[in-house]
Length: 428
Image 1 (cartoon, one colour):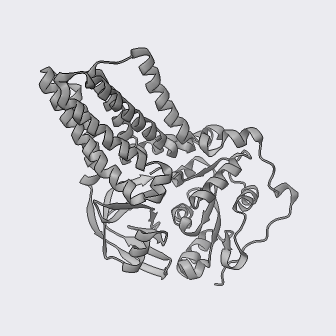
Image 2 (image 1 turned 90 degrees about the vertical axis):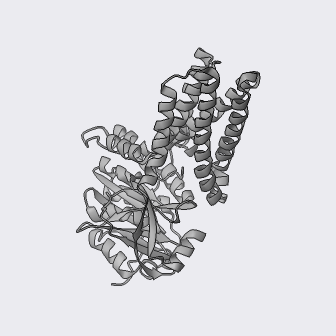
Image 3 (image 1 turned 135 degrees about the horizontal axis):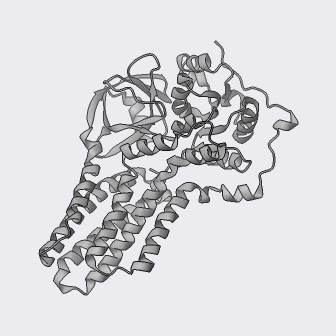
């Protein structure tokens, strides 16, 4: 079957890209996305508590610190994420689209993590100030200073610009830094108990709870076989069958060195049987080495975790917009055919890059898909393509899976024109 060429841009005036609403352009700006608003909400709750309670007692400060760090950890816990997605995507189609659109933003819940972690850092710093003049608790003061230093380093390296530039440093500092911070919390609680001679029962219980949820993903660590095919030097297709068939819209963390580096990829469960696939494209040092070496085994951690694609069930029909290997996260939804869908996929040499089998598999369930071969037709105006496809196919929502710049451009442009649009936010 020859490559499917790009469809011509429709010239109908009703499909021309309209001007964005000025109000919507501002309200749906990426800086005002729900992720950031949730972070601000957590900060506002902490400020309100500080204003009314004016806490100065050490035990009270310990409580506030534990609440913030517990919230930061809990909202990142895989089981909690899956639970939130199940609740927020359970809205029936009879519910007004505006409410379903709000429910679809559940994947922005990571903003709670950012707000709570930042507030935990500030409360820790304030605890240092309170402890500075207490000579009975000098050891606790020094430990808390060390605790603040570690959490500050983790927070700075997690800033988007630094996280993108030094991803491995960010990942390792977050892992080992947070483990160290948890151990310091235990040590601080023990010293406080030794000096005070009494301790509220909920403090050690809270620490046990934190420790359990930190360890939980690692309790499901396993080394599994993987089958790899490489239709081109750019892509590796991974096949797993170790007793788990994940749900569509989920991702799996894989690693070659469990303590050092993890990468999440969208699962493509087999509609007819057990097992699933992952698509790994050459997008950096790790993926490049992975494709070249083609390991026989990888490490798997935790459980399949819901992602942005899982929100499709909120809508009667969805337009999927993908670039390159972004078609991987779209594939399980297209194959399952549980929700009416239409695909716009822009990529270079689709058959040469991803193989005839994958392209034919897509066309078998999406015969009307627009597959834009960038090598033959050049780089498309993705916003215009998305808008026109949205108008033609009668979708209720658009889900974009592309690189960060393209995703935010498409999502912002469409939401500025009143279209419910969703895309990854690169918050991990």
